Length: 154
Image (cartoon, rainbow, N blue to C red; front, side, top):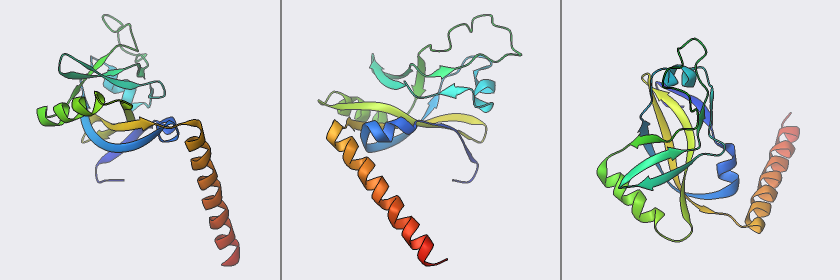
């Protein structure tokens, strides 16, 4: 974990469903009390994805639960699209990769850096079923190796 970086939520499904090609850090445009909900770990990335609209990147289907102590005026949709803040060159690079066949952008994790919410966005390619089975088999084999080494040196 980097200095001053607190991980709030991870998308564990993303590494199972996709081959991760490249990752980028982006800021998120939030409204009102959404940052307070994020600080309380009331965010879910499971169904989230990144979509390009008019040369901008938007975080879609990420659920940030409403903050209970705040008023609800204007903050009714926890699944609303949220704009991602990045440099123009990074946005152009991501958009060009998204237009290639088979590539998508998914959020990997949300974290706080000096009090600001950031999201790690990955350019990924979808796995086939046999790729998923292969990665599960590799994880199981690695776990068995670690167990054998642990038992041997205890």
